[in-house]
Length: 340
Image (tube, rainbow, N blue to C red; front, top):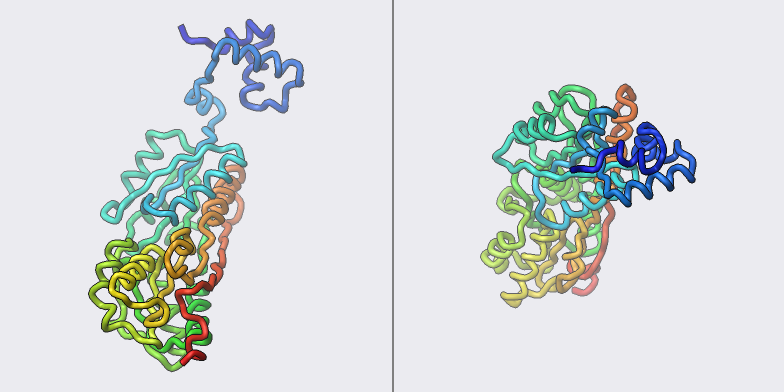
């Protein structure tokens, strides 16, 4: 027969309400009584009924993080930051994802109806995603990562993608002798790719240069597809004034691997740069120049303002913008213009 809270109270010689306070608000019980109750809980192997506790408190101390994908270090760092912050604030984190063919509505419905959640942090990275309306209609507190949605005022955490891409491009033009860019992005509807591409074009235009559509390729952020693309086009791309700007480090690594297999020297024959500064950027040979995106901080910030929203439902919306940072390594061929 399962051990009940009454059994714990009897063994500890306290009231049921005292046991409940020890479980839910330890600081409200003096140290001697708390130690006696916790000893009884351990001796009996008592496990509180989380569902009943959630109904009583009208909260579960569980929040959800919903991402477009779970593949790769980029998303893992968001999860890591979110989880650390959730635990520090006394919450547990559950993680799920929705794919490009799913509007996210069914997932949000399932999370709301079948899970005992206090709030949602949802990352939207596709301009064509239909999860926005479903999220706007949510009955739960929510925060949006990496984008914003139409409709009700809401909390959000944004990466300043344009700033990061512009800083990278200025470095390439000023310090690396780059005059021709090949842009290898993610899907055309991906908001990060759109922001990075637009920013690259603006910096090039200001320098009197162009990035024609024929030099823009949209892939899927994966190593393998970038390897195949580069294996086909590197002979025509190569040039001491050329640089391949990949919209993430994984694709940049695939391009470097293809170059190595073809005998194309990076950065002497062509420069290659990435974005995100994941571990793969330090593992390629040569190591990648890239833009460090504060992914862990994005996850942590999202959970922090979500928990603030749960505690203060009527407070004004918060918008946090995080700035990326240029990380210069060997793959960009710094000062190549001086070596001619």
